[in-house]
Image 1 (cartoon, helix red, strand yellow):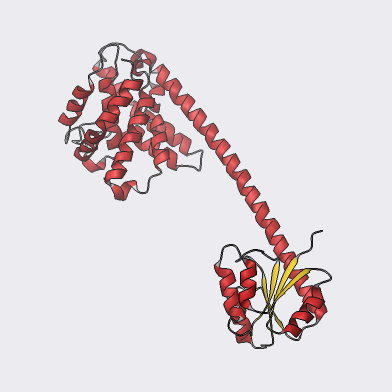
Image 2 (cartoon, helix red, strand yellow):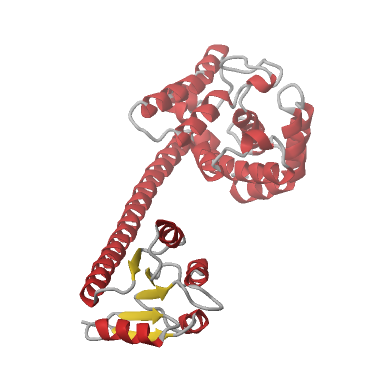
Length: 358
């Protein structure tokens, strides 16, 4: 077994000799007659323990341990004070500065050996425990990442299947996610609605947009896939997808402890068809009664509906879609979010060109 390294620091050569003789049969011992010398050696070598005298000229033991504990490379070295001071105040000061023990001189060599042995064992156990905790954390992180990856894969697959089922809007969910990412990035850049948005986990927000149309699962194919214009009754059925989706997410929430992602998704699902003037659905919310996430998605959702082809219409050119959204400022849409959209509308156009079925 590799021998442990002990530094002994004392300005008295007799004390250094006694200390070294007491432990050198078991440990590799290096002696230093000043604080300055041991600090210089610590720049090159880290021992397993330091035995440190308190009363030294120029730099006393308290000064030395303060320097040791100040540096990241040396702060974890266990330090035992060896001193002739036999008062509670001095001992308390040494322990407060980070020493692990305080041995009064003159000391018994056997006692010194035993105290060193005990403290090195404690340090070894601490290192083993830390190593175990680090490995455990890595295992937990790896397991968590695996679970998250599986969750995301299932979620993505489910939403892609929904997107394929709602064949009429082909690619809508993916485009919505991309548009939302752009809009949120610009919103944070401008500091718009900062007080509310600062609490959001942006990665989760963007990912949760995948579920905004999840309620369409409950809509019959004869209505959802109808190529022509919907009747008034059919449109009412379609409108109900917002409440269906909200209910689906509530049911999932009841069976899980992780709600942040679902909370975002629930807001998107239930509010992205509300309108600034209160004429939207399903609850007729008005102005800032509509959650900010819903107001953001309203612009994104309408833009995609305008520029994408449908069996009953050709997609509008980007410029016309922008004009329609601008015309809805203050009625359909939050005016501030329309202004935000105008700032990044060219990026929306690029996404649409890449992903729409023109």
